[in-house]
Image (cartoon, rainbow, N blue to C red):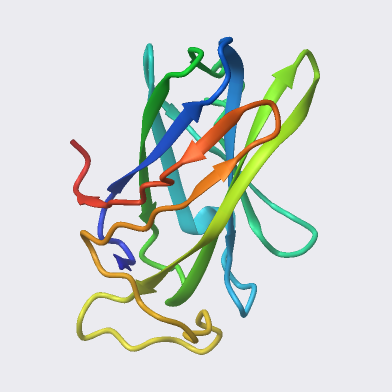
Amino acid sequence: MYRTGGGAQSWFLDLTNTTGGECTAIHPVVVFTDEARVLRPEHLRMEFEAPGGTFPVSLERSDRDEIIAVFDGGSAFPGFAVGGGGSLTVRVYLEFAPDAPAGEVVVDAALVQRRADDGDWVGEAGGYRFSVERPHGEAVEAGALADSGERVHGGAVAAAAVVLGGGLVFAGRRLRRVRGAA
């Protein structure tokens, strides 16, 4: 569960390479979907840790009213490299603005391997659900996100293993959230 205006919480993406060779230029892409389709890029802030520091995640709204979050570091990040048979854990920070709508959000994730100005879709994992709530005592305004599913509360772990084309596994899309940015 996230609270609007509650500050950043962290969670993790685990990437595992099942091939013998290194996979480079890997960029996770996370898609946020709410049933009412009222969530906007300005309602959230997202960053990720990588060699060289913490980088911003680019947020855009799709023509299907989804929020697309691309781990590109504002175009400054060359992508993750995962050695053959190796794994990499990526720490992600997410927070919702005070005016973000409350309700349920579904997150799906994919991995893209960049090749010059293009890229290959190398796999996906999805279906993680969580709720966005107003701080205690605040009413939920009209137009809030629909709340129609099971809630996942802080400290919960959701895991999925997806074999991706090209041999990279988005293993254990560990969405263990930790309060506060560490």
